[in-house]
Image (tube, rainbow, N blue to C red; front, side):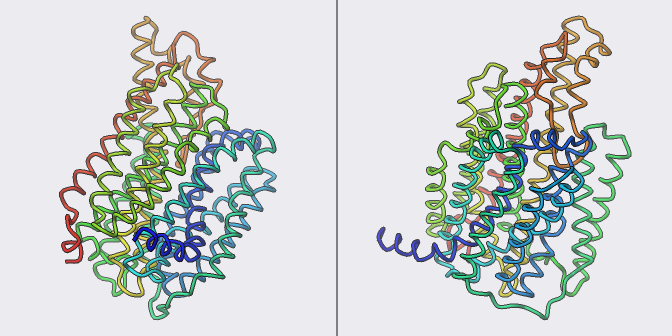
Length: 512
């Protein structure tokens, strides 16, 4: 039996590898930019208020348009749209290498996000229509394993290359992967049946995009205060757009998202899990980039190396997860993955300090990555099993909409919490030292001015903490990080409990 299983997986590999590489680009491209954003922004003299839009532009475009891509893929063909998306990403990144300034690069990031929209749900949808149902969990596991290996190896290589060649090399990585994916998809992946009779729900897509953009902008602006118009106006607009979308979806003949899907408890729990895992993964990349460079004074190469240890072990674990999901149900693996991600956050919450050993960041990163791919494999099988014929692209894109939303919220939420807890710590230290609030604020003004009060990301200058006088800001920053990680670790624990209670316990219940 093991030999038969190995032969089956080998036969799947040519069909799965192309879509897997395409999907990985949508993760890898923003990741390497996020980890090396300080080098890019310094080289192009990016103003602090534009650091956030530059880092989050592609993610915001994906969040706003992923559902449109899913519906379009069902209409014109999954394979055709996926190859078009790969071509757009290749062109956008190659042009990014030639960026004369941050304005041009920002425009290319927007174009890149548009191309990557097709790389999110469409690869998973292709598995739905090209792989037999009994083999699909293993195929999903193989796809996630490819993602793990490339995302484990590439950050370290990219950090080294940036130090040797320069930041422009970052934008050569995705095109190389895209070209390989294009060849594999063209050669081995069959085209899916199309549904040309279904139009695009433009109103629904616009309302969802407005909902997501308003949430991200409002949450980012909350760093300046909840009562400011820049915070509550986008949040009110987002809430209004969400209500209008629900009303529209109930009355529309063919809405972009069928609300009936959410009546299934497993489907709703799976979306909550994918939102959670992507929020935690995106937030951790910001934490590693900021805490590693600001407090621990790690180089980009060293931060990238944190993703490397255990990569092959995680890849093997996610393939095993696919087998277990196919044999049992997604429930036990989803719960396990979420608990592992919570353990990662709690480990960092318990060990973060200005003098912590760098090797402690390795298990925290490894546990987060392991938990995310185990959870993601079980989520994907749960969601794809709900897709009706001809709607695989649309349903898979619903999952990716939640994933991209989590990725967009992650940096913003983590930095909002980190800034809040950091402020609480330095205020408490100032009080204990007998310093006035005004004097303490002067000491940290340079640090706070390094924050981009816009959605998508925040950058601290590694030298700013050492310039502040009168306060031990390194310790305050570390304490703020510990409280941040303790807070966010509650989320996967809650979702794990909900999954344990509501997900089917047996394969028969899942089919029912």
